[in-house]
Image 1 (cartoon, rainbow, N blue to C red):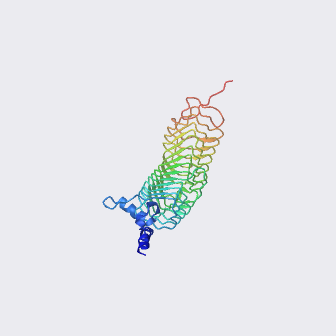
Image 2 (image 1 turned 120 degrees about the vertical axis):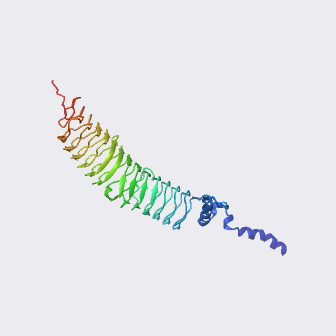
Image 3 (image 1 turned 60 degrees about the horizontal axis):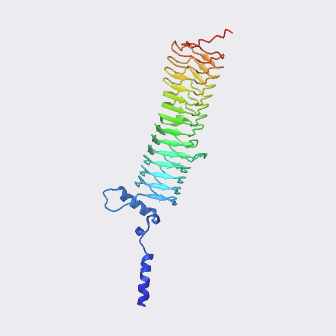
Length: 346
């Protein structure tokens, strides 16, 4: 009988292995967080381990108030998870489902959200700096995401559709957007939207009346039928076949801008400030250009065919060399202040 008891004893002990002695991947998330806290605290002599979670269902887990900086989540289900008041700096989320997750009042500096699902998630009142948000390519993502009153500085966005983003009071500064979409957005809701790069983006049918964009750059982007009336730009750059056809720039301030090889067909430029700008090889076909302020502006090589042109206040230094005028005639090499049209003697 004693022999049987001794034989069973090791088996019993093995079946009661403490959670802390389980392999890391099999430990509950609460234990992994304890390891992460020790790993972050260099003064703690207890051995810790960086939080690195893969393929776990963490639906509804409350991470609120926890320092999860430098943690890694891969292929995790984080639906309805709570990260409010959590430090997520340098944290990575890769291929995770963050649907309806609460990331409000959170610090997300240098964090990454790669190919994540975020429908219904909230970043309200959070601080996001130098972070990266990249959606799955070639996927039409119209997720609702709350960015209200969020500070978003020096962040890169890739393949994000902002159609259903709530952006009231958001502060966007020095951000870069690659292949993103802002269809029918009202940029007036932003508290700030300055120093921005749009590369291969779409902003069609949006409203930007009176918006102060500051420095802004458009590369191969479309902003068709956008109302930029009384908007203010500083050194606005528009390049590489960007298309602004049908947009309004009435009384807008575009002083010191650089436009090159882009399209402004049917646009309205009434009393627009274009002083000291370089607007070369651009297409203004059928545009209405009424009394612009265009001193020292270089329009060389641009097309004004079929447009309504009134450059009464242009002064003598505006350059129309090589332009196609509204009647289809070419402007000569000495077309300063007006179009000195080339006369065909044949």
